[in-house]
Image 1 (cartoon, helix red, strand yellow):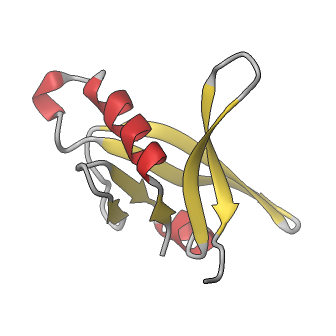
Image 2: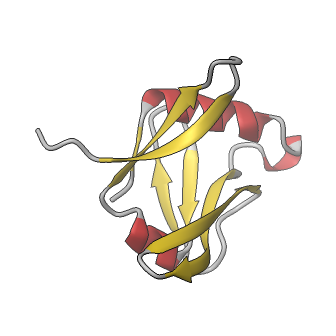
Length: 101
């Protein structure tokens, strides 16, 4: 199952707090399969007010939620969602392999 780091959970919480205040608490970050080409897949990332039918919901400490469309859930099953900062200070989500303990 996708693991969400504390830093990613904070970023999700900040993003969803900017959305419509009526749906705050229910909204989350949604991954959906956009296209599948060869060995690679492209995922669409969006802030959603609620999960869609069939979505898997991954919760993190702090209330951040990630909604995974079924095909995206299968692709991200062994991954970690984190955030990384680039040289200009912008923050972006990153999907990384899980580290074996």
